[in-house]
Length: 300
Image (cartoon, rainbow, N blue to C red; front, side):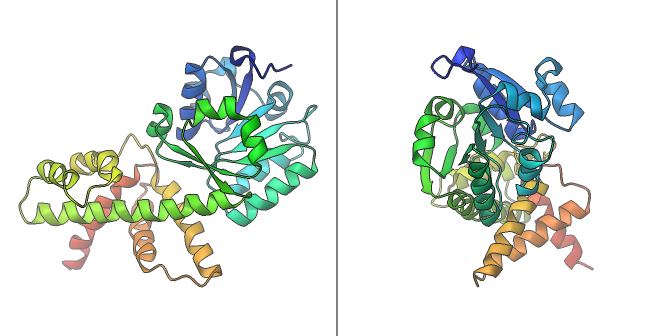
C-alpha cells in the first residue's frame, strides 16, 4: 500500500530509463522516494540498478503512480495496453504520468482509453534537456485534468517544480512540439552563425561569448553552444534521433493543418544527414557538423 502523504514510503514507477528517465530518477532519489524502474535496454537497467528493476506487472502492483519516459506514442501504447503491460495486469487504480513527446491525437486517445479502464492519465511532456531536468530547471507542460495535477502535486513538485497547465490531453504535446520547433531552429541558427564567424576567421569560443551578450542571446547558446565550439557530441543531453522523431511529428501535424514550415524542412534534412552517417545517438548540437558538411558538399 502506498502512503501518499509520506514521500519516503511512496514507491514511484518509471518506465524508460534513458536520458530523461534517469533525470526523473535523480529527482526522486534526492527527494527520498522509493523508485522502481523498467527498461528493455540492459545497459540502462545496469546504470539504474538491477536491485530496483521491476517488470511491468510488478510496477503496476507496487506503484500507484507510474511515470512513462519512453520514445513515442507507440511505446506508450505497448507498455500500457499489451496483455502483460501495466494496465491489464493492474490490481489497483493507477495514475499514469506520461512525459513522452507524442502525437497529440494519439495521446488524446490513449488518455481516454486509460480512463475507460478505470485509471487516470496526466500528460506531462518536459521542455528542457535531461541535464536541466535533473537540476529541476525545466518546464512541465500539463495536459488533462487539472484536478489530477493537483492530486499529484507532491510528486510533480519533485520531478518538475516549474509547470504550466496547457489544456485537455493532447494540448500539452501540441505546445511541446511548438517549443521544440523553435528550439531546433535556434540550434540551427546558432550553428550557422558560429560556422559563419569561424569561416571569417573569428575564434569560436570568443564569438559564442559575444553572442551570449548580444541581442541574439538565447538559452540554446548556454546549453548547446559549448558543445558546438568544442565539437563534442558524445555525451548527449538530447539526441539526433529524438529531434528527428519530434520534427517528424511537427511536419505531419503541419501537413494535416495546412501549415507551411520552410525552415523545419531544411532542419529535418540537415539532421537526417547525421542520422544517415550513423550519428543518431549523438547530441543534436551536431547540427553544426551538418552545416559544416554543406560547404564540403557544395565544393564538388
